[in-house]
Every structure is written in C-alpha cells, then in structure tokens.
Amino acid sequence: ILLIDDGSTDASSILCARLKKEDSRIRILHKPNGGLSSARNAGLLAASGAFIGFVDADDFVEPDMYETLMKNALENNADRSGCGYFDSSHPDEISADGKITVLSDKNSIIAYSACGKHNNVWRSVYSKKAIGKIRFDESLVIAEDWLFNYEVSKNISVQADTDKRLYHYESAPDSLMSRLNDKKIIDRVSVLEYICGSECGKSLG
Image (cartoon, rainbow, N blue to C red; front, top):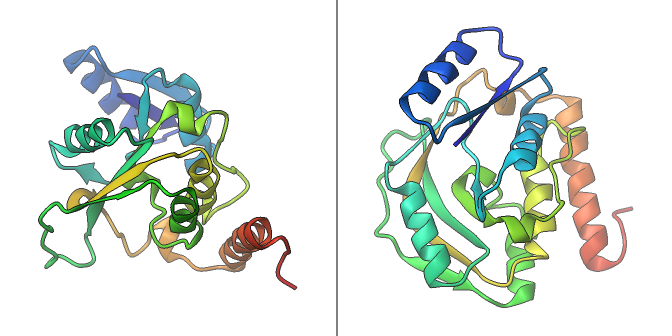
C-alpha cells in the first residue's frame, strides 16, 4: 500500500506514520501539494506490483475488494478488473449478485472507456504492463480518469467487470467534483474532443 501525502496541512502525515507502524507493507510518499493527478502519478512512479489500484482519500473499500478484483483478473487473464460501487448520496443502494462481464474484443474495450460512463479509476485494478508509461494529465481538474482509461484501454487485451459493489465513494456536497466552473467544462470538452478526434479521425468543429 502506497500512501501519498500530497502536501497535507492536517494530521494526515501523522495518521500515515501510525498506519506504517501497524503494517510494514505500507509505504509513505511525502510530496508538495500538486493535486489528485499529481498524487496518483507519484504513486504510479513508485509502484512495483504487477497490478495497480487507486483509492481516494475520503473513500473506503470492502475488505474483499482487491481479493475479488485480482481473482477475476487472474482467472480471465485480464489487464483490467473492475467492480461496482456505492455512492454516499444514494444510501439505499444495495449490492448486485456479482455477475462478471468479460470483454476481449479490442473495439469493445476501447468503446467501453471512450463512452465516458465507467471511468472512475478507483473501481478497478490495472496491470502495470497495460499502464506502461501512461500518466494522468495534471493540467485537468476533471475528466482525468476518462482520458487515462481511454489511453490504457488501447493496451488492454481482456477486461473483466463484476457488478458487485465493493467500493464506497464519498459524494461530499462541497467536493471538487461538485463545484462546477468554466475550467471543468473546458476540460471535459477537451477530453471529449480528443477522444472523438482519435476515434473518428477528426475533431469536433
């Protein structure tokens, strides 16, 4: 487990140190504040495992999430293995029965990411091989997951997704995602334009 302390000004660094004492498998990376994409990129640079997953600071996962994702990845020889998630803004949601959908057609895998509907990186594990040198665009404040998944999808031969909800997303009313502004609109449109241009051979006019 890599804990990225992205220039925190609260007690996060103290909490990280305490957790490291409890489990020697935990590594801590302290860095100047650079934002979400910068923190994820620092983790990607330091990661040594064959598969990589992401958890945002205010979220949590079910105890068997990574066991399930890795089992599905290995059994299906998949470069990406994903799951469903709970959203705190919908507290009445119940988990599904664990149906697994496997995609092995290249066009279907790329289309799955290009459509922009399933692009939260924290709901998946990725093979380090598929990620390669792909990194999150640190200039984006939104849609960085979408762009990352689209680029990685080009390197994926098989992906496996279970509809079982194993990740808990904290949808805070004052979160980064909830504050709409011009920059977010521009970022999302620019990613859409890039993907459409890549897939259709032309940009939006």
